[in-house]
Length: 172
Image: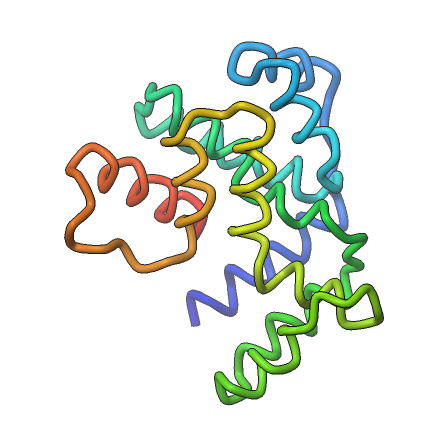
């Protein structure tokens, strides 16, 4: 039931997404110009979500620079395609399909009608590569890449804490 409520909340927020001028100025506290350019490529909905994530982490007392940068850029891979709201909803609903069916549907990187689904399925890897090319730290790149994966047991304690904080905030 929590997941349903979370998805309804996400849907409602997407209909009312906005980013203020003061929030755009705030970005310079966390992101250098190449990273800010990545943020600006994201949809308004993803920008709003990322800023909300930043605020939530700060409310929870987080000050780690890599974690806060990753919060702002964790969904930047989604900027690789124009993803419409209905495609996001369809992708979530596809999560109810058997794993192989969804994976096969989202496997093609060809720029056809399925490309937005490919981007949604692979946005973590795509975003990590964009962040790496923009000069983000290895820690930020790793957080973006891993933010939807189970936390591996061999990960260093500080990285585990950051990743856990990012995942927890992203689920709220």
